[in-house]
Image (cartoon, rainbow, N blue to C red; front, top):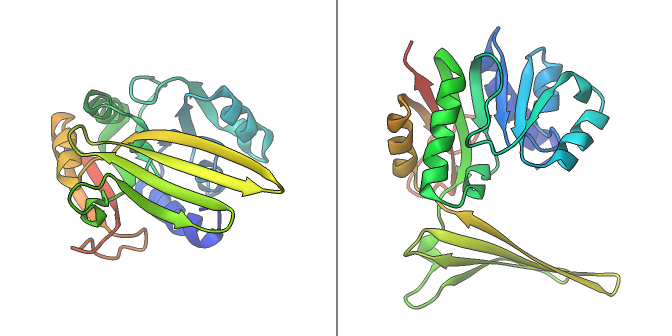
Length: 223
């Protein structure tokens, strides 16, 4: 996810949408996307719940020029308006209720200037791999890492479980998510006053199709 092959196409799209305006990253983290976007000359602000991640961003070259508000990106406001707001790498799923995801769309829309865009990168729920009666899907099985997703289709909740063994030491963690369908995201966008402008499988504009495992969706605020 940190390789130039992963980062540069995303930055190309976001810089194009920003134009001469500003960009807002929801869940800015340590600046994987924000720093190279700012290096293109786009003024970038961000919101993140983790002050530790924000400190790591500020310690990197160029990080001190990026304003970061600490708080829940579904509700936290920053000053000004933006040409583009964006939420990448499945981060919308970190909001574990439908209400929080709806609030995120409304918050993004409130930050956008007329004609501005909200961009989300997220995976398509992998439920086709679940046979009847099964709730667990493995996504990585190696000598040092086991990864499993546990689904509850009644609530659209899931947890990713990671077990790692390295140098004789073991580590286990579980991360909760709420998976969400493209059509559901479109409805959240409509509730926030946005309309779908584009949906691709990848940042290079590959069309979204039946077998696509992720999508990049762009919603636009009315001019």
